[in-house]
Amino acid sequence: MPPPPSEGDDSPLTPLYLCCEAAKTALKKARIRHPTLDLSIQPVGLGFAFGLCGGEKSGAGGTSDLSLSEGGTRLVASRREVSAARSLPGGERADWEASVPLFGCFSLRQVGREGSTGREGSTVTPLYLSRDDAALAIAEAEAERRRAGGGGFEPLELRTIPLREMV
Image 1 (cartoon, rainbow, N blue to C red):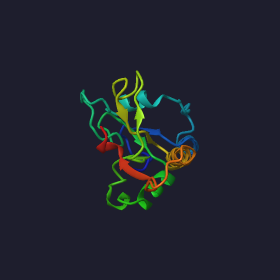
Image 2: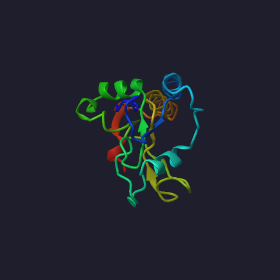
Image 3: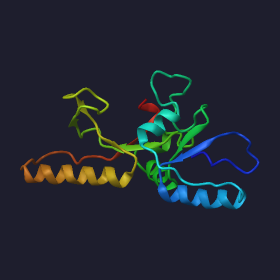
């Protein structure tokens, strides 16, 4: 995961933290380094953050890599989620220094809703920014299988994929 800008760094890079606690820690450090500035945390929606990082597929000045953007903004994944991504099958091969991990199970499918990434009625795979959220979705899906009497299924496998591969 790329480090936050250092004191000697004069680039206008703005980190967009996906972890609230990491944002609070970075803010405390930044206030110590720059006591005369009125620094604060500004919550933004994920879609807005993607746009700031050049996440639009149209590529209007942005890049397809949302963790390191030439536009002066970048998404910063939590160390906990990067560590979780590295521990999953295939996660050791990904470059987590250059992308944000997404978690999910490729066997899980949901019907897309209006306003979601896919067209209404299309099938989509839910992806999560948190390993714990993805694991909970998988556990709920497996419990639903058992309630429906579905037996003989392979266990659902938690996987990770870099965000840069999804845009």
